Length: 465
Image (cartoon, rainbow, N blue to C red; front, side, top):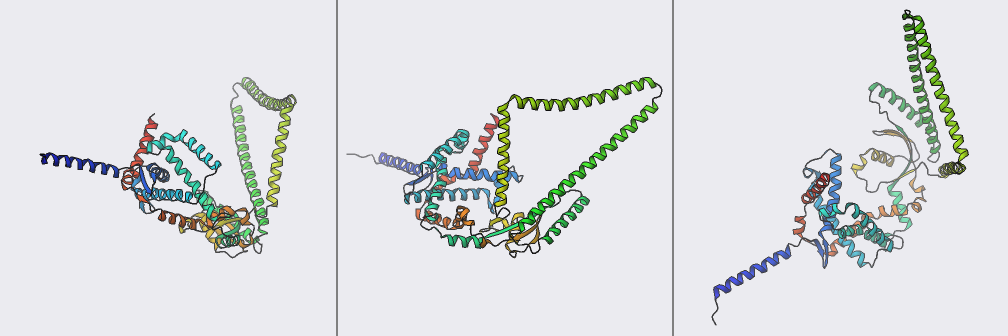
């Protein structure tokens, strides 16, 4: 049998090309961005994390006055595009690790959590589904992203919550509070905001005198008794504000009186000068004066009579309405009384407790951060003066260890902060154990610039419509 070798070589070459093409096509599957074993993460999840952070960064840049070329900006000393890729990849890896670990621990979402997820996603899709789909995020991908927060919460509780594998003791949690929290009370005096230099100088001198006067009153006052000084200052401030209002009112009245006097002078000057037509001037003048006086008087009387009459008629005609009003007044009154009683019986009403665990130099450089830093270095039980850009303060520091009941009322917030770093370390362990493989083709396809263009295109399309 004769074999045409030239034809065979052409056929073999063609077949090789087809096989190569199929192989390349398989490698360029960009529907997923990473996988672990048989678990693949759809590209929509990666895009979702990226778009969410891109939107947040664009808002921040806009508030800073940056409205063009956002990718020329840096975030955390990185070009915005690099930062966004790292952010999206980090969150996508965490998503996959949480999903696998949640299943490995045998945990399940509760019926209530499942219902919350479905309801929330459906509501979001009704209002913004087109926006997400335009970027390449399906409803299912969005749902997966939302589920991750529930998986994370469940895993955290499984390890650190009450009854969890690594639940800390109350003693350890109290020690954490003692080591990381500050406890203080303060009197706050707003600084002058006057733009006129002389006015500002005068106001500043008066405010600093108030601070010095109350700082002197605070000498020897205990942390517990500092509440009385706060009340005294509040009453002093209120009286001072009322006096200033009264002073402003009297100045207005004086100004008004001066204006009326000048009008009277002008009027009499006019009367004296218009002696040519005495009778007509007198008649017109008296008519005008009488008419205007009568009109003003009658308007005032009528108005007041109408108001009183209508109130009487309404109340007598509608018994139910009056009862409702009385009931409402009683309710408001009782609520106010309850609030006052609660404030009076609350031994910690003026106290502030702040957790400084993880506070950065940048946070300590803010106005509030400067105050926290000052309190942190204060001597306990001794009032001191402090000021920042906005206020003068008289501050007294309390003993954190004395708040042995703080944990019972703030258990979850203390636990979350105390175990945050440990939990983040566990997530990194789960990521390493998952042996995640990246799909570079998909990552290179769905760049921050591409997602930005999609967002921009959607915004322009909807603006035009």
